[in-house]
Length: 250
Image (tube, rainbow, N blue to C red; front, side):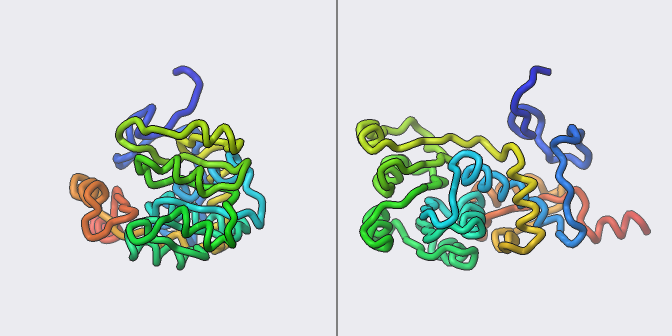
């Protein structure tokens, strides 16, 4: 196998199996006090950590906007706040998810359906742009809006993308010396550090876990995640749930 980025479900078969083989370098020790549901969120938090620190070089006290309150976006809010970002903004279109963002540390939430997100960010940030935007919405004009939220020399981490190629105002990016980073997943030591943050209860990742299904109900779990049924955010599939394990033992 050629060397390079290896990710379950991308470059190899996915992880929806009772057993899987992985190199020891891909494994992370999970504290015994952490539930299976919480443990599944370590990688999600690690992706946010990687985008904020390794890619973006976030420094405590810098201002951050997260656009899109999905699992990675909500974890980006929690990790940014835990790293000392201030203020932290969250924009989105679902009030219940924005409210969850405040519980995870967002200083300001903005519903992009009811107000201009760019104008609101600058107003709430005392008329100034922010230092960093983590784009998790995948909206067609998201890159342009992110760039308009920034100070000169600001950074954008692209953690999502639209289904179709998007028109980008490159001239604005060039004139304002804006940096763009693409992120595919977690990297380097980010996931290990995210696990440490969760173990230390620096933030409560379990807030974004909404549903758990046994492996036998995998099609239903995928449908809940894809169609956001019952406002699903983070859907967990377990090879064996506790009751099944006890029944098997008996």
